[in-house]
Structures are given as C-alpha cells and as structure tokens.
Length: 249
Ligand code: BEZ
Image (cartoon, rainbow, N blue to C red; front, side, top):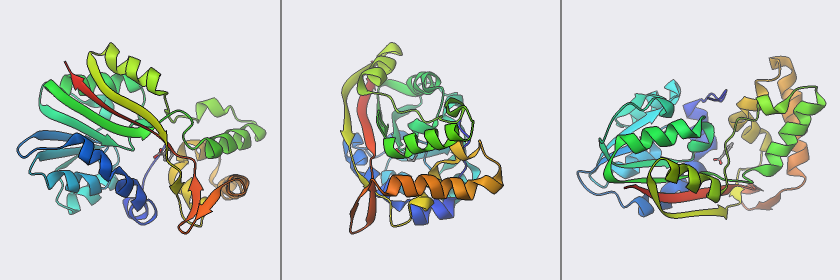
C-alpha cells in the first residue's frame, strides 16, 4: 500500500501529460466493441474515456475517492476499489493499466488478481515506472530523509522493477508474456519542480511533520533541478517506463 493521496483537480491541471503520454498504450491494447475491459488505477478517467470510444464496456477502478468522483463526473463507470482486492473471476477480455502499478504493493497480489479476473486468452496491457524511474528525484528524497535521521526504506514505497523481474512475476502466475520493454522517456514536468514533489512524493513526505515539508521540498527540488535538462515545456524528469502485453494462457 502507499501513503500517496490525490487531489483530482490538481492532478488534471498539473499532470495532464500522464494521460496524454499513455494514449499509445491504447493502440497496443486494440480495444474492440463489446469487449469487457477493466481500467486498473483509472485515476480521473481521461484514458478510460478514450477506451470507451472503441465501444467496449469499460469499468474503471481506483483506490482514491477524489479520482473516482472526478471519473464519474466524466461519465465513466468507476468504482472505488484497490487493485489488491480484485475479487472477480474470468470476467474481462482485457485489463489495461497506465501509470498505476508502481503505486500498488504487493505486486504479486495485483498480478494474481488480474490473472483471475481475465477470461482465458484475455490480455493484460500496462505501462508503469520501471527500474531507474525518476532516479534523480528518488535519490534526492532518500538522502534528504536519511540526513534528517529517517530510515528511508520505510517511505520509499514506489515499485520500479526491471523487465526481467516483472516478466518472471507475470509468468509465475501463468501469463504468457508477448512483449515487455523498459525504455527511457524523459518527461516534461513544467517549470516548478516543487509541484512535482508536492503531487507525487507523499509517500516520502509522510515521514515529516507538516511544518518541515516546505523546506524539505525546496531542498530536494533545488538539488534535482540543477541536474535536469529542459525543453520548451520546462524541466525534463528522468522517467523510465516498463510496458508489456501478457496473455492469460
Ligand atoms: C510515474 O512513473 O508515473 C511516477 C512514479 C513515481 C512518482 C511519480 C510518477
């Protein structure tokens, strides 16, 4: 589980790129009319709506109430549910997930639940942070916490596996992995590196009292920004994605 909490309005304003960049994953899924599809970690529903354009019957689940309200306002069939509590059997033709699996532990429980939820031959198509993802931010957060006397392992809850690790995990539950790749995708995060930490690093911030968080964010942001490249949309953070297609055999 994670200490990350969300504000769906802020997320839409500051992290719209998450859904934008996830659109090519839908092409990989190739959703078909009338298929039953689960969008696991649907967030505020932007990509779920895109999936619905195919004519598939799409259900979104997310563990965050603010995200679920926002998705429902858009007309998405969205349910408040954690991905580790999937309790359905052979119900879906496909399970889709973008930028969610790195938040959810234990990953074994997620993969087991997805396998069970799929019909035989069903596809699991997903992308999330892989080994080395946001390493500049992660190492700055770890050292800043350690410097303050905290055991960072307790708060470093992101899950960023290698392709080999994740393939083994998928296969151990019976999936046939059709393809899996780890690729580097430097991602524009705007001009305010502090916003990125405020949006995405709640797991680390949970170590600190409210009164210390501002200076902590300023410190890690300054350190990280000095090493980042920029483009016309602002700073580029060192995102690494793990993308795969696996089939229930
Ligand atoms: C991501 O890979 O999408 C991500 C991971 C950790 C924090 C923020 C974003």
